[in-house]
Image 1 (cartoon, rainbow, N blue to C red):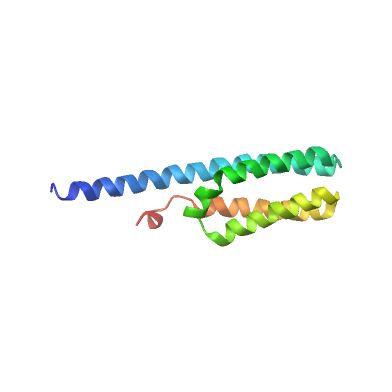
Image 2 (cartoon, rainbow, N blue to C red):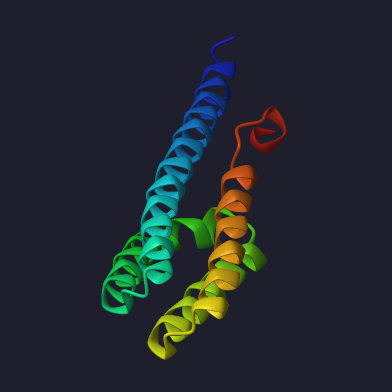
Length: 126
């Protein structure tokens, strides 16, 4: 029984990490979604300077969590989200509302996918 204690502790730590990571990913995705929705409103109003500022804020949040995402989540989705952020920044720089809205919708999808990838499940732990 005493030999099982380290294994039980390790499993408990893995479970705790999985729950924490899921919460963190969900929290950061929600923050980025809120910033993105603000940028969309600003683009609809053709307030491109504010839209660019919002995208800079979104990029700052993204770069803060990207190292964690790269270690724990599916690389393809992370790369796709980064590409969507770059396309959004280009669309805002060109003041292209149609491209901006298409790329914003794409980024919404990638943020939702990141949240789904990190949903807590026993399969992720074992």
